[in-house]
Image 1: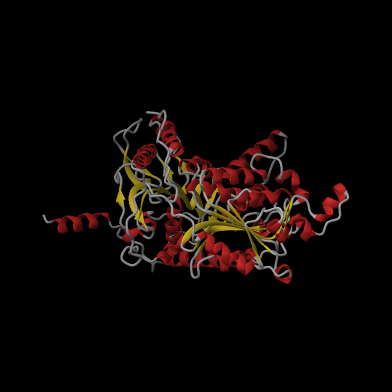
Image 2: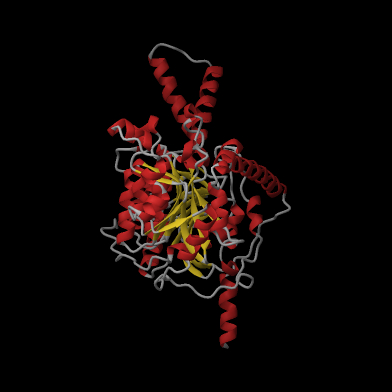
Length: 577
């Protein structure tokens, strides 16, 4: 056999052949429903991106300043994409204060002079850029991502500081406003470049942020002071004009605090781009990356086919082959599947995404036939339910995760998980030990981990598949995502039974109509909390993403992960056997 024949044979075995019937009625219905959901989501996102609205934007421009998103447009490389993080932060929250769209700050990863940068830009159209509790949480998450991946970080500061009516929720705790400055110092100590452009107000505790970064730019007409003129007069009786107290000229000529004084936002952003262009390049990545051709290495199938896979209606029974998702994410749709015939409700395997080597752990949503190895049914065939983690699945995944750590291969987790299997057979087979082994492998993993919640992510399955508590470098969700302790229907059934028994113990009987009303009420509340927007508002996910953009987002985040060349020693600790 020639080398060419060997290569062809190997490649043919590893290419995923799609069996998705796009013209099938169910696929067409899913496609249309998801398109409608995406359209509604995009309208919702566009409204959030307006910040404080047209009137507030006009007021910002009247001061000779650009809005946060106008600044981003000038800062980023023309035609490049911006991976926005935390757009839904504070969504549906702080209604008593008029709301805080995107928590009053724009954050994300974009290219400046070809260099990937984390950018944090206060939106002064939202309560003068004041920090709500969710604002602090969002900025801290951006800094954490920058820390973990060694991403140069740019701050566009235009903020009135802490939102005083909620100061008790912003100011004092370990994960509140003050942690931002601590992170500035830690990032500096690790050699992660940080540059700040003060383009408006920078007041009180917030004044420490720019001065704790490497380089400080400031526009004329901006202010940088620990206490503004009114507070200074109230505190010590001193009347000082804002410009004399903390203007750009004073800080450039007298205090020496700022490094560059610029006349306008436009000039400041031009200077910032110039400075970023002179930063040294990252060290060589320890992860495998090969040259990538956007045409030759593209997946064999259209990314928009993913719209046809999942019915987005909450509670819908979605049964599909997760290979179809993988085939539309990985280079040339090639996937070297690991232990393909064992533990079939979890898919594990190796691939490349944009030239970056990855290990993929994904829930399989089709039912599988498996020979029982242990317990009272040993030797018999059983049907395993798609989306459920069985003992063999957990054992396979744990070993695969350990292998990826040994080989320095970043991990991608694709969630659509109901949880771990329960019952006598599962307990006899050692499901608790196997689950603990998988959770331990995820917990001690040292390679970059990226999580995408495709569908359900319930119970301990969310943990085992690298949920937020297990330190994924990035965590994203499709609009079809749902995650909670259990599904809305299961939770409603359980809680209704508990409530009915409580009533019966109190001597009250409940009619079928009352039971149904109670069920509907509980289910609606539970499903609202399982909606990905609910989690995104609270910082549980970094961004809700269009399924068709998953591949490009993974390419960007894998590149970001590769900026940090330091990987700790893998030490899995004690594993249950």
